[in-house]
Amino acid sequence: MSMGDYDEAEHRRRERMNTVDTSSDDDRTVYEGTVEYDSGDSTEALLEQFEEIVRR
Image (cartoon, rainbow, N blue to C red; front, side, top):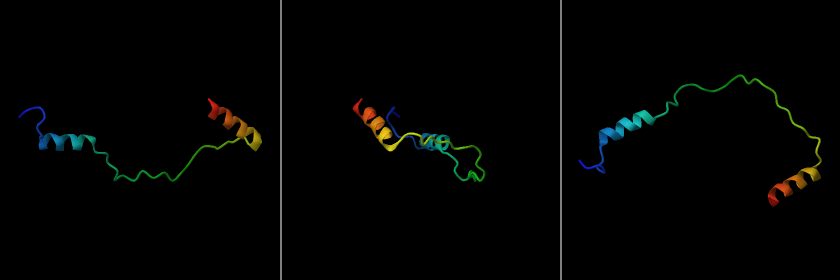
C-alpha cells in the first residue's frame, strides 16, 4: 500500500479519537456572578469613539 492509499481501519481509528461525546447533560442551571456596565458616556461620545476606531 502506498502512502496515499485509503485505509478504512485507520479512518475509523482516527474518527473514534476525534469524536466528542455530546450525549451528557451539560446544561447549566445555576449562574453565579455579576454584570456591571457603565452608562456614563453619552450617545454622541460613544459614536465619536466608534468613528475614531473605524478611522484607524
